[in-house]
Image (cartoon, rainbow over all chains, first blue to last red; front, side, top):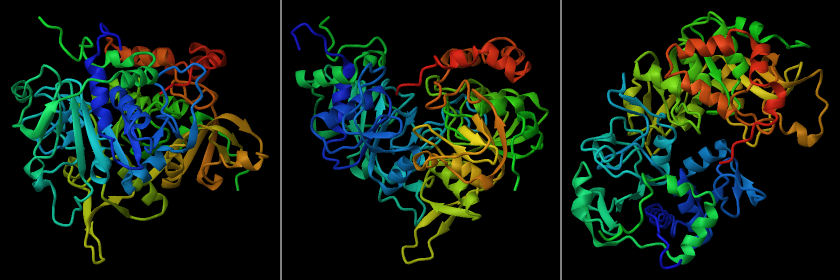
Length: 266
Length: 293
């Protein structure tokens, strides 16, 4: 990295996302969307080579596949992972997925289905997809490119698609043991569920962001992790991997106006 | 045994009845039996319950007012994430829905194929999938663990519609895509399965490796429809890619005045051979790129 090269916030978020997969052991890393996928790729290529990854279609690859048109690049297949096998992997718990839900609440519950009244939603989104099964079976993290109260809602999410830690949702006999929510990487900070009764905490703040600013953009009260710090900037080595994994710079389109990781001094 | 199950798309659709539960194979914008869907659009069929890992198949049937109830986990065209006509129907409260986790959906098809009334699963517990589907019941393990599961009811289909790369007149099929999705389960869950195919053979004579591309047994297949480019505008690995220009054209129909009417008049009403000519036929299909993820 040269002195005047501007590191983007998306790149900082990619590095933060990659941390979610550290020390997970041998499991399937599913980063859904540009930032999570580059994050998972970075994890596998740096601190966690034991991770399994797919070509985002049907094959396991020994080396993460760069995003978008790949020219002469030949994926290095090491196995097969059809959707049917992904489901089997989910139910066996050997996966850590990171996705971007439309809404998240204080209990870690997520919504990808619809916003507004269920019978006549203001906005129909995708549907619950695999969130109910993912969230109750294996490790999950989240990405939020637009940290605000419309995402981090004050009450419960409008349609609980992914489970969380709200006790009232769990009737006796329902097995909550496999619910394991890890990180929420946003454009302002990194959150986790490490507070009392899994309360949401700010784990690190991105450069130039204050806790008060994050709290103001969140619909529920936040705690500060005791070791709260600043989200680290990418190293030169990490940036090199990121560029290799994202040759078409799709990461530049993930945040509005592609802001820098460190705001220029006014 | 029927020695020749070949029939026209119209003949296959003529087997369907108002109010039936129809399963549609493929996944999102991938390997959808669109020629059969277009034939339904041309028919008078109505009040259907559609069971699908949804893409433009669901959207078009919603746009045409064919859907009374939708059983789904998602509806998307991937590159165009929000399926426009599904959204309109859903937001307008025009369709009844049974929204399920992707795995519950699979479990429901499996239960039907195994002639079980339900299969237990953890997926869906503690979510609004359970709360929003009052017909879903839970069940307690009869063993010492006493764990509570959702008893995912069988998703029994009156008919399943699938698209394959190759079939013979007996109803043997080959699927060559990297992923065969859950089509085999749709076939097993249905009373009658109609398969459209790119290539139709008299009788298969296969080597062992090719025979492994056979996803389910021919006794499940009631009709075989020869429909080249029958998955268009969705993609059919490895034969052709998705037609993004066409998907965008279809997507725009949701925001144009009388958009759906115009789309139908241009692409559906004239019939399948006109459709193929309009989309540029095999020559253009050969140029459609496989999506790169």
